[in-house]
Length: 253
Image (cartoon, rainbow, N blue to C red):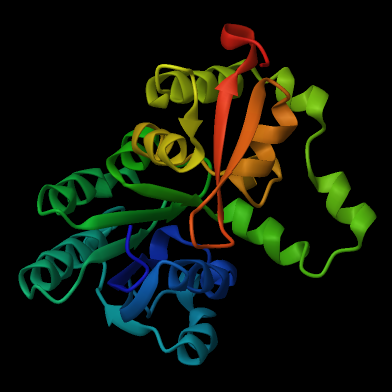
């Protein structure tokens, strides 16, 4: 994934959290240059009356869409139409769909068919279909936790990270990591961490080491205590590449 990609951010205001907007944009900016920021909703409704200040500060363009029929969300259709117009402009490399609504599942799939990288941003209650239709799905709860942990004390930071015992008892996580390592391993059992991370993200778009209290996948891997770790120096560089090998399968050599 390129870090210079041009991103269009489309926000379903009826299904997003205003208080998380700044954190969402900060996170997305790590993945590229945000070109367009639009929020869709009926701005005449009381439900959205507090959004004005945040949108002005974050330079988000409000797109007005009246609700013509009670119980129907007309802003969804407006967002989808705009997304297709932006897609055909050929100006963007990635789209970020900010919503917890499964109605955008088809849109995410259509964008991916056009080889556009799709970020989804929503709550953990988001239906699996929408999450799996995205290339990356970012949980708002994780971003909120990062904000509350800003500049933490050493003891506070430690308390937010699961213990080795907690991690080792998470059967789903352990199986996920073991399967990725096995699929990416060479004949000697060594798997590049970066390749494992990419494979996991393709299979589970909502996977994020921060969901488990870790800032990096490498630290999460190390704390599971189920892999042998090897850091190989890159020639003519101070950088090192991390490899892992399943201890249970290959033992420690």
